[in-house]
Amino acid sequence: MTKAEIQAKVQSYYDMAAAAGYNVFAVVLLGSQIYGLDEYSEEYTSDIDVFAIVFNSFEDLIGNSTPIQRIGYTPELRLERTQVHLCTFVEFMRGLMSQNMRYIDPLFSEYYAVNKKYKDVYEKLRSHRAAIATASQYAFAEASVRFIRATYSALAPEDGSSEPSNDPKIQKFGYNPKRLHHLARCLLLMTRYYNGRPYEECIKVTGEDRERLMRLKKGLGYDEAKAAIAAGRGYMNSIEAVANLIKQKHPQDEVNQAVFEYLRSLMAILQKQAIRAEVRAKTDYIADIVDNIGDDVAE
Image 1 (cartoon, rainbow, N blue to C red):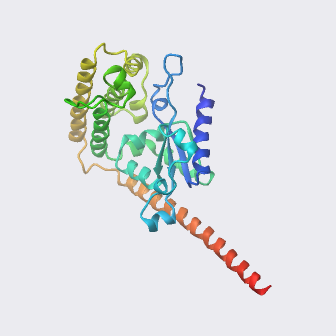
Image 2 (image 1 turned 90 degrees about the vertical axis):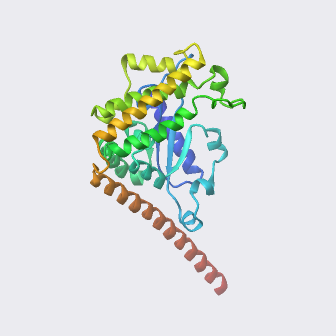
Image 3 (image 1 turned 135 degrees about the vertical axis):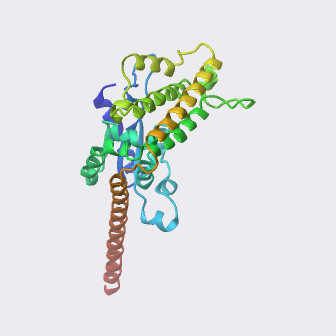
């Protein structure tokens, strides 16, 4: 798949979300393409996974809901449900502030489709991505462990579980090779992060590391599930150990407050602007109805 085809797919997801009625901020690619771990061949084809980042509406505010609960997945989006991850703008910004790699990594993606109104804003946000990724290295270490534990928990059925797994990869291999490769990748990332490498270098995988991780991803790394699961446990233990080293090296009070203030302000200003624009449009619509009622009565 060419870069143009990947970008076209991302744009198509943006168009789907907008057509469904979402007020879209941006649709941003996440996943293997960011890390250089994508492949398109007869043997293996990578997915095109995206965050569709959408604004809360005034109705969501007064109804204590989210646009995702209110609108949900249209038939078109439902067909792509495993690829399109709907995410509110507030959730995305809070994810950045929590220093969660799930939200930070997409800022390093070259594939995205942005609402024209916010193109300059998003480009500025991306320009600060390196500072965002290291705003609190202590928080990054803690958030990373929490996020990676979820990956580890989905590696294989729990010990002693008699329930068959619904995961087709676990049914085939006895474990999920894609989850295993994520654990190995995250250990590589965390080690580089601890060593002070720029974040863009931390996440890119090339050369022998790429070959090794692609073998793990395809289920070619281990002949037996028990060995793969043991390796996954080893990766998780090592990740936790590196996270502790990061926290020792960078104490909790070592924080770039300017980054967090920028993210908080951006979150508040853009969400407020989105709601104001919506209320203004609805007010004008109601005024037109009232004016028309007046004309009808006069006639």
